Length: 300
Ligand code: PMP
Image (cartoon, rainbow, N blue to C red; front, side, top):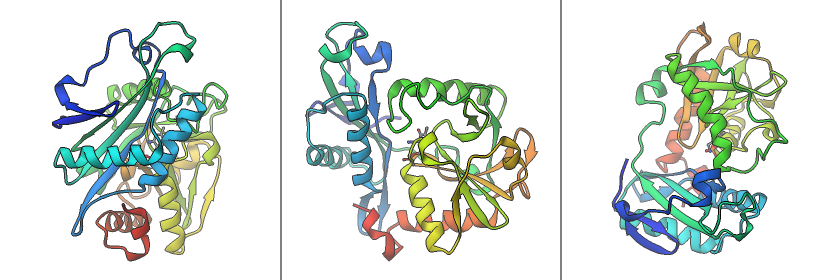
């Protein structure tokens, strides 16, 4: 994971020189917000997938965490495009980060500056190329997803991801690819960095948006599925519902649309990518190649 340059507080700096002080507030307390965005290569050049929605979410995350981003949305959009061009990347992952810098290490963050960086790098299939085709193995995490009132579900706050990292470490050490977290009441929520969908009797279900991160891929999958004629419903469900579903899959910027073939050693459906997942995946990847006219509005 490396590119040549990083955008840092309005300047383009060498990757190896994009450094912060060890007393940076966010390094100690996770006091930052971030985004994860993808750019894809198409026959008409590089496109960024749903850039407006990602930038809007970044600003909403910052608003929730009471950080004033010292740039407007147009400047952030331009910075994202510039840093992709400077690095000569045809497709990439884009990571804008807005964080509390150094002034002091009080838990009162208001006197710390708000800094901003945008890194981009080439990042293939997050859960593996093979996983996209054959499905991945998962387990229900013993860690509950952070309670709705502990921080914020709507904001991509850096410190929230400690919860995800605990779940991910446990999954990796148990020999599977990814975790599925339940909420404190035992209802299914999402993966460590992906929203969750499941299919039963031809109906597609997903977790209500207010108890998970409001994923932009989640929103895209819902729209694609509905346009294909599928019924999509939000539902709170127990882990047992996943075990007996015909198909389960993840959706996220990094993971894109990844089938799940196993949960807690239960085989899901036929134990491979199911037909509904495959249909949605196919349209999703055609969209990212710029080949679905109807969805060109999602590409910038
Ligand atoms: N849930 C969590 C916890 C995530 O970190 C992500 C990745 N941003 C998602 C869901 C998926 O969101 P998106 O599709 O917007 O990437």
